[in-house]
Image (cartoon, rainbow, N blue to C red):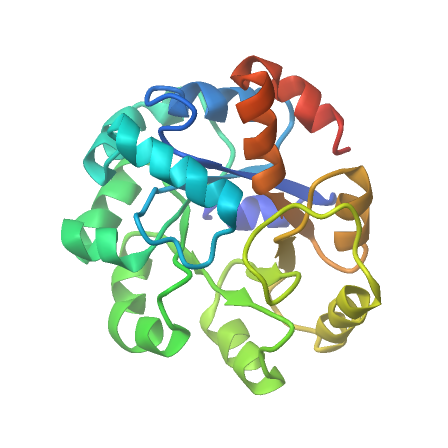
Amino acid sequence: MNRINQKLEENKKLLSVYFTAGYPALNDTVQIIQDLEDNGVDMIEIGLPFSDPLADGPTIQDSSTIALKNGMTTKLLFEQLADIRKSVNIPLIIMGYFNPMMQYGIEAFCAKCQEIGIDGLIIPDLPVAEYHEHYQQTFEKYGLINVFLITPQTSDERIRFIDNVSNGFIYMVSSASTTGAKNSFGDVQQKYFERIESLELKNPQIVGFGISNSETFTQATKTTKGAIIGSAFIKHITKNGIETIDEFVKGIR
């Protein structure tokens, strides 16, 4: 069974953390992953930096720009992660845009992911219909779960199609904006969370965009399986360094 599915079966609310590979420094990637697992994070999203990250807010965009300037590439990321499964057991997901994956070659990219122990992919600019028609067989051939995003504007019909195509979890975007940390969620988000809960989807949902502290983590996971933190974590390591990852995680739950 895929590590993501195993983790989703655990009787707990899951904390997933996103960071940009190659940031703050080019060779920080493995240390950040190891420290996150050591401090009780359940899943990790490794951001593959891209020059035009349309779904990302300014914090993640800036980290992506710096990572690219540092010299991060798809090839280098795979080299850095070559031995990651000797020290890390939790699910690892690569989040990135489709263009670098196409440049690498879709089948070659998926094969490399399987070789090093990547469990899933999140590709914001790959439409679900395009994936279903052209790429699903390839992803599944290499044991990769593809995670799709939904927003408050996504129709029930499309959500059910995504649910039908998915075999892991659904990334539930908390708002229609780009990524970024918030201090709390309002009535609009709460009604959205309740609406999705009422659909009784077969795949669990994990909330992303706007999770920054214990309060937003608790709010987001009231009706869902877990929450994803990205911008707040990147801000933390930017200000305090990667040596303080333990402090950040303790502040969430």
